[in-house]
Image 1 (cartoon, helix red, strand yellow):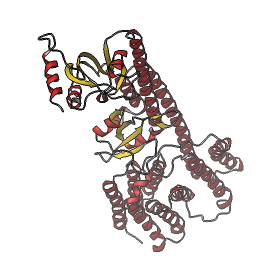
Image 2: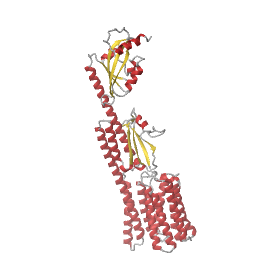
Image 3: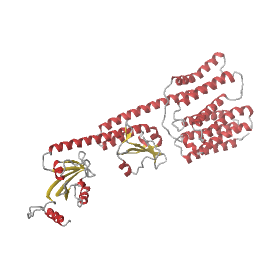
Image 4: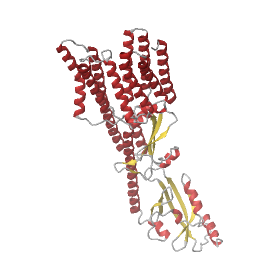
Length: 540
C-alpha cells in the first residue's frame, strides 16, 4: 500500500509536469490544462486523506476532482481544433450518463453485484473515457489525447479493482493516471488540443433534442420509481447523475445561444458595413468603413492593426508577402511578432463572382488568433464587399472622366486650341482636334503615348519635365506623320491629384516648323525658336 508521502509526490509531480508543459508549449488556451492540473491536485489530496483514514475529507476531494476534470474536458471540446462542434458529443455523453444510471440502479444494484464499488465513481470514469475517446477519434495521432484516454482508463480500473482487492496492483492504476496526465502536457501535440478553429454548428434535428430531453428526465424518473417501490437506496448516485445531466443540458443550451448570438452580431455587422461601403465616395472613406466594420465584427481588444491595401503596390510597400503556394484563395495566414497573434490576409475579391481584382489588394488584420479564426468567414465577406466598393468608385470616376472628355471634345471640336489630357504613364487620354491636325493624322491610335509624337532628341527632356510635380513649360519638336516637324511650346498643369482629372492637362502652342526655313523677323519670334532653328541646321 502506498503511503501519504507517495501520493503527495505523485500528485505534485503530475501537476508540476502539466504546469511545465503549459509554460513550455504555450497552448492557445491554458484554462483546460490548468483545470486538469487542479483536478490532479484534488485527486492527490483525496488519496492522501484516504491513506490517513479521513474518509469525509477524501470523498470531498474526490468529488472536487470529478468536477474539475469535467470542466477541463468541456474546455478541451470548446472551439478546439479536434472538435469543431461539441453538440453531438454533449448529447451522447448525457445519454450515456442516463443509461449508466438505469443499468446501475435496476441491474447491478438490484442484484447486489460489486457492492463495494462506488457507482458514482464508475459513472464519472466512464464519462471521462467517453470524452477522451472522442478526442482520440478526432485525431488518432495526437499523443496527448491518447495519454488523456490512458489516464481515464486507469481511473476506471482503479475505481473498480481497488474496492474489490485493495492491493498494490490495483493502486498502480491510479499511478498510471498520474503519469499519463502529467506526460500528456509535456508532449508537443498538446497544443493541437486547444488550437482555435471556426465553429461548425450542426443543424437542428428533432432526434437530438429528444435524446437530450430523455437524458435530463431519466434521473427524476428513476428517483420516482425507487420512491414508489419503497426505499430509495441509490439517492446519492441519482443526485450526482442528475447534476451531471443538468450541467450538460445547460452547456448545450448555452452553446446554442452563443452560436445564435454570434450569427446575429455577424449579420448585423456585415449589414452595417455594407451600408457604410455603399455610401463611401472615395478610397479613404472605404478604408474608414472597413476599419469600423472589423471592430464591429471582432472584439476591439483582440484587434491590433487593420490595413486596407487597395492594390498590390501598397502591399509591397508595407512589406506584405504574396499568397504562398497552396494557400487558400480567399485568405491566408502570416506569422506575427507576438506568438499569441496572427495576421490574416483577405484578398480583395469581387463578390459574388469570386474573381480577383486586376489591381489586387487585400484587407490585412493583425490580432488574437482565436478572434481571427472565429471571424474569418465574416472578414472574407467584408473583403469582398470592400473590393466591390473600391471598384464602384473607380468605375464612377472613369465614367465621369469619360463624360468630361466627351464634353470637352464637343466644346473644343471647332477650336484651334491644341490641348490634351495625359495620364501618369504619359498615355494620351484625350486629344483635341487641333492636336490631331498637328500630328498630321485623322485619329490618334488607341493608347498613344505622348513620346510617340515628340522628336527622339526631345523625348528625354519632355519625359523629365512631365515626371516632376507641379506646373511648368517645356519646348520641343513635334514629329508629323509626313516626316515634317513643328516647334511647339508645351505648357502643362499637374492635376494628377484631382479626383476628376487624375492626369496632366497639356496645352501646345506652335511657334514654327522645322521642315521649312524659319523666317528671320528680328524679335518677332521667340528666342527659343531661333535656337531650335540653328540646331536643326546643324543636325545633319
